[in-house]
Length: 290
Image 1: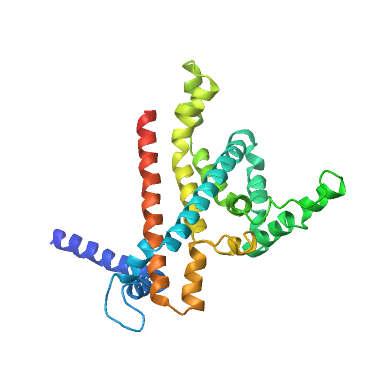
Image 2 (image 1 turned 180 degrees about the vertical axis):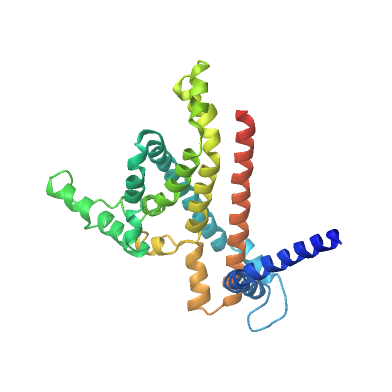
């Protein structure tokens, strides 16, 4: 009798749990799963013909223009990720280890200031700074260092990387900071007591323990920058389109949802593969430091 009551109680708790999460589950399903299913369906069908086919994917995988755009998108995204994380780690490290606990909240507040304005405005401000008649060129000309505006600082990949690195810097700083905050300071003291210098203590203790935050920052920056299309239009001047620009053209201008969906699915698969590679490398790094 007691066993029956215990099983019934667990079953009742399970039902209550499912009822509790069901609204959230349905909401997430409608907003996330349904669009993905629709995109996958369109990618597997042909425009004006119907029927399931892999012809859209074959064209995406074999046509040079798509390969070039995807390669450029991955190159820009990986460069942005590297620059952002390398610059974010020292900032997060400084706030975590060298700022008084009572002032850490203030520093985090200052780091989030860029979020006070929209992403579009931040990108446009960089266009004003790097533009042909922008702040940098005007300043250099006013003090006589250059006679004509520099063209090498705008409408190129480097300008796009700089803009995106600034835009996503807080996304990289915060997870690294959280990971550093979780490190037991006594482990660092133990490393120094065993004769390790500061660099070796950082390499063997701090960095491995903070890698979950670093990988989180890498993925948070890498995944959205692959699909960014605002920055190439504004900072790249439309001369350096990325894969997201092609998806926009197919979906909105050429009204070809099928090809646009195939490009989008291909991009998602490539991003997933690269993300798994990051996770694998992180696992191997942690093994190597043990």
